[in-house]
Length: 111
Image (cartoon, rainbow, N blue to C red; front, side, top):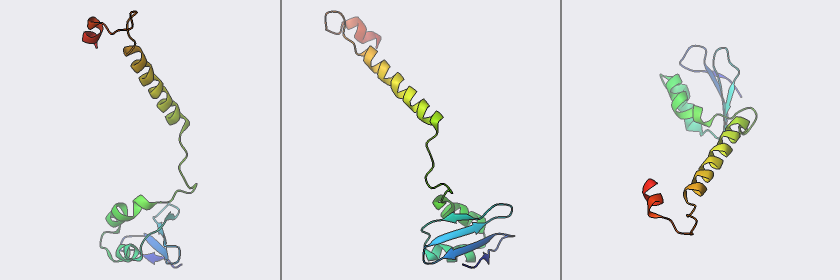
């Protein structure tokens, strides 16, 4: 896999046709791997006059993180669980019938 200079200062790209992996190297950062990139996208990246725009629009969404899948944050999962519990509690308390087992007219108007 050979690195090719793009039409931008110090930006390089390398493409593996077998695996269809594209590696892009920006100044001051480690190379970034992108999976399942068609050959024409790599060729267009080499030929475009604005490789930064082309990269951000067509290539960047296919970035492969170093750890594979992104783990779910504990705080995100906790917030989601609390939100679901609060919604369930609101639904249960607002739909409880009165002592006679029938919704009263005043309860329906207040909701």
